[in-house]
Amino acid sequence: MRAKKLTFLMAFTYMVSYITRINYGAVIAEMVIAENILKSTLSLAVTGSFITYGTGQLVSGFLGDRLQPKKLVFSGLFVTCLMNFLIPLCPSPYAMLVVWCINGFAQSFMWPPIVKIMTSAMTNDEYQKGIVVVSWGSSAGTILVYLLAPVLISLSGWRLVFIFSAVCAIIMMFAWQKFCPEINATVKMSKINTLSQGETFKLFSPIMIMLMLAIIMHGVLRDGATTWMPSYISETYSVKSEISILTSVVMPIFSIFAFNVTQKIYKQTKNPLTLSGIIFIFGFLSAFALCLTTGRLVSLSVLFTALLVGSMHGVNLLLLCMILPYFKKYGNVSFISGALNACTYIGSALSTYGIAWIAEKSGWSAILIIWTFLALAGGIICLAISRAFNNKFMNK
Image 1: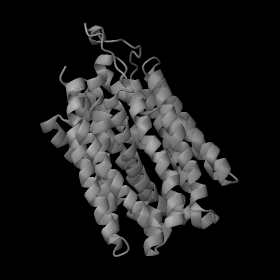
Image 2 (image 1 turned 90 degrees about the vertical axis):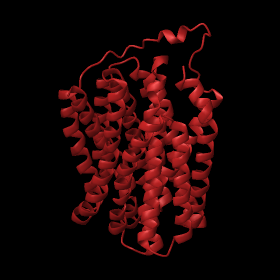
Image 3 (image 1 turned 45 degrees about the horizontal axis):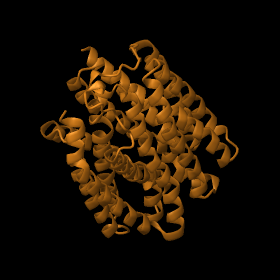
Image 4 (image 1 turned 90 degrees about the horizontal axis):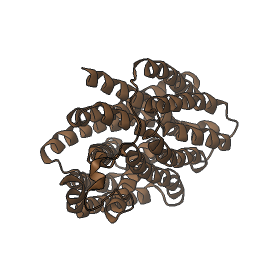
């Protein structure tokens, strides 16, 4: 019962972190129209936040193994609340860039400490079940943002979306402080580190480098498609920004489905890299179908984009959640979680500004071709290193 309560607290916290992080990307299509600013200029704030979020993952991961994780998450919620209140007051996109970069860094103080709390307070079985529910928080937050953003925009413009998000953060701060337990955050190196072979964890071993490259690719696909789908739909099919934002609700629904299917298959296979490779290939087929059908029907473009994003959420569950217990023996789960998650947001940062720039220069067809290539490359990498990863980390 305690594990279930803790799981739901983490899920709601993760949901609020998404509400206060992806809201900018959700309304950027409306901001382009309302403020008459180029999307590449407005996207600088999202790109900057991905960079600071990724960098902060390393800092947060390091501190999460040494300081009280409860305090780290609370501090992240507090700062992100302030930044969401400040965005509507910004006089220029460059002021927004500064504020949203700070927001990205604050957001990084949530995921690694959450993983630290869960791996410390739960058994492996409880963790594997709980982390799926927590991952639903990202989809729930995305659905909430994309459902409410058009309503809030119609009521009072895009600024109201950020005020609503800040209020959500305030509520979550009180709930977190009241219900989250404190855990021992001191690093305790496992006896496995003192095996006769003298083996220790190496972040930049060939296997880990290839793993991080695959994670970067999934970040490009997941967050690039999520951020720019409203603009792609709006510009390709000439629909209002509110309608294009609303179509994005389909993506997190597919993501929840992807989480559940991925978890069930993983419970049978216990092979995260091979399964990730297969899901990447499914994403490749979705991106290829999107290339072939773009410009024909809105419903087809929404469907295939949602399948691509959903498949990347499945990859995310495997490569950033399910593999973490295999690193517990090295005693630095929080740091490894932060390092791997940082790779996601290297991809996110590359995609956010890169997609805007390429779309302005070469059109959306070029973006779809790049997505197709990256999904195929990610699948090949995961399948190529699967056996080596299993031998090193899973068969000890």
